[in-house]
Amino acid sequence: MGVIVKRIYLFARVAKLIAYFLIYQLVFTIVGQYISYLLYDFGVEPTTYKQFITSTAELAKLYNANGVAAGMLLSSLAMIAHLLVFKHVRISKGFLHEVKRNVLVLSTLFIGCMMVVFNIIAVWLGLDNNMQNEIELMLNSGAGIISMAIIAPVLEELLFRGAIQGTLLHFFKNPWTGIVIASLLFGAIHGNPVQIFYATCLGISFGWIYYRTGSLLPAIVGHIINNSLAVVSNLLYGPTGTEEVVNSTNADITTVIVAAILAAILAFVINQIQPAVPKPWHEASDML
Image 1 (spheres, rainbow, N blue to C red):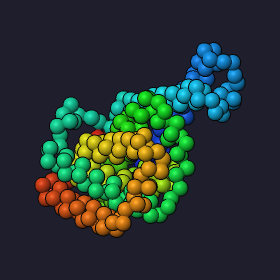
Image 2: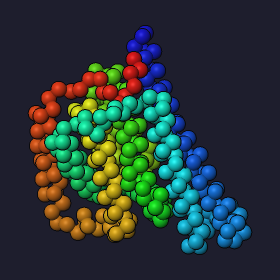
Image 3: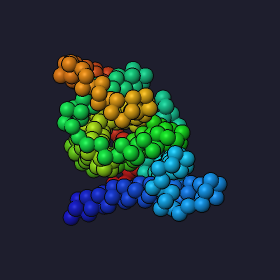
């Protein structure tokens, strides 16, 4: 009976964290967009809120983009503060030095290899990208670029690896249960077919690195690199730029095989030089 109660409490805790994440996003995005509407209405030309958010005028789109991006940035910062203040995650003073440099480098290279593998597979699967308009809107603002490239990765690792996976690792005997559940939630929260697949698979890679090192730092670094590359690719080549590069390559299968083999070698080396799984996973609060 005790196990059942703990399991109910566990999943209620996870659901509450995701609910807070969604509420912060909704509230701050709406507020940011509405403030941008008021600035446009008073400073540029009188209009209704509905006309403003559906306008195709470049200046209105710019105001709208800045409002949405500012809202998303503030929502991420608010959620990070929530996680830290209420001790859902714990960051030590030596956070930036708690992982050996060689482990950090190898972990980053491992994540990079997995990025290549899953990116090409996502293109092969032809999964839809239903969020491209929203992404382009965010990329029209400096706040949006900072949010997507840096702040969002930090928040998502604190939330899905630190708070959620860290808690699950305390409860389930098989660590892969916690890693997979957290990664599935991480993918699902994106609500976009191509991102659901890619984020879930890459989340498992982040989750394994977190489990092996006991630190969120390697996953945060890898996540920032992943998002920054995506932002730069979109800015330089547009929404279909990455797909065209991948589809124009005749060595896709070879690339996937080589990247997968390198990832396996790197994982083996990490296991050898980091043999003991750290316990407890100190970023997660001790709930049980």
